[in-house]
Image (cartoon, rainbow, N blue to C red):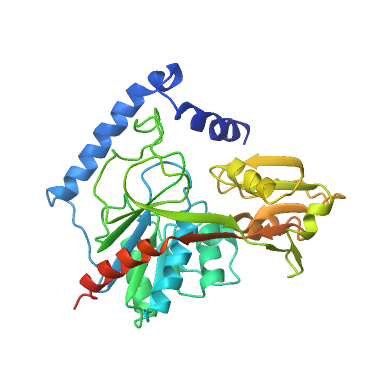
Length: 331
């Protein structure tokens, strides 16, 4: 855990500039680029097949390592599609889970078996969610179990070339593309710019083009028993905060922006399982993200989960609706 925490905290700082540490990692980045080109070439030449599901497929992903708000975008997208009359299902790899099979995510599942983000999507949206190492197999299994679904949203699948898609949505936060180099010298999973249908910024837009989304915390926090507290109520005294995210500081900063005084903060690696979390019912309220809540509540049920609300600008939805009109479900 110590090494993982160090890398989690150190590498994002390396990726901000083209300093000496980034230059030292360039030979590995070149190897990564060669492997990426070889893998992509297999699909472009037809040596490896791309599989198309018999329904519309929308992929939500990013080109940088670490979270940029893909899961909140996915949930907002599901809500929009339902409002437009579509029957939606979601597929995901289920990053961080201890299982490797293809399975449906149920509301009572545990994060270690299905992944924290797919479980959150299932609990918040109520739509069918399936996880699998192969997004194609997950999509096929979802449609076999729920044939009424006419639109599949793939959470974090921009680089999963085996799955053909109708619409690609790339999500970026205020980091943009960092130093513009490929992993591990930089944050890029693939070269940018690259063609996508929609680019959505969840932070300050430091790239040209795309649409903007407003990211803010919900004002009602909830513990494992369903007891609630408003953020306004929590301003009266200091609180503690913990986050197992790609960028925990963003959660802490948003709490401070809402007027909360943070006595202590603990930044943990993304998808941290909290199995070694020392249960401590301290005198101060403990705040966490909704993504961490299902895991943390097993150790500390009094922790208060604060939801993240993401609202894309209306122009984004108009552009998406125009694309939807051109991508009727396949026969």
